[in-house]
Image 1 (cartoon, one colour):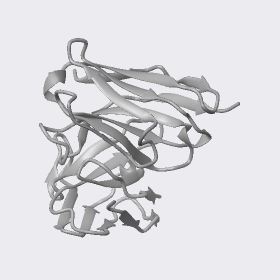
Image 2 (cartoon, chains in turn yellow, purple; image 1 turned 45 degrees about the horizontal axis):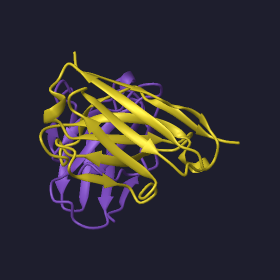
Image 3 (cartoon, chains in turn red, purple; image 1 turned 90 degrees about the vertical axis):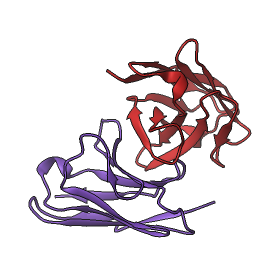
Image 4 (tube, chains in turn brown, orange; image 1 turned 30 degrees about the horizontal axis):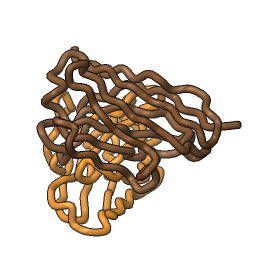
Length: 121
Length: 103
């Protein structure tokens, strides 16, 4: 069964840092572009970041550019999101998701259940 | 940045009725528009990719149409489990703000 399991969420103070992880199983991780998507309380889905199969290409939403870094370790089938300079508006449920196919144009067909990040003093 | 605008924000219908949800892009996204269903407490579920193709396991009552800037998700006859939030997304990046489909 194809699965994604996020971890690393928690409570962090404004200005702090946190690293999220996403462990993949049941599919060929090193053939799949990957993404992070978040949902703030009471809000809709927001695309955060994406990474190519090799990790050589990364993409970010405007709200996190310069503060968040996406990476992957294909030997461990794990996706990461390093978050720094965190703000209250980064409070959200963070989902890890796999893109359908070899590109990013065809949607995300496998999702984790998310890990919660709360930024508060 | 391409902006996706979904309408209506909320759609109130009954089981058995037809639902029509709209997604408009601020500039052309070609055919690269997908639709998701999101139920509370669950992970989002891919319904439609390339504007018109149903994802694996998606019932035939879900259909997508459109290209360029105007797209539609149609649910032909609503089942109780279809009442949820629906989002469009372009090129694997920005999402629309969502449509809540309520009973």
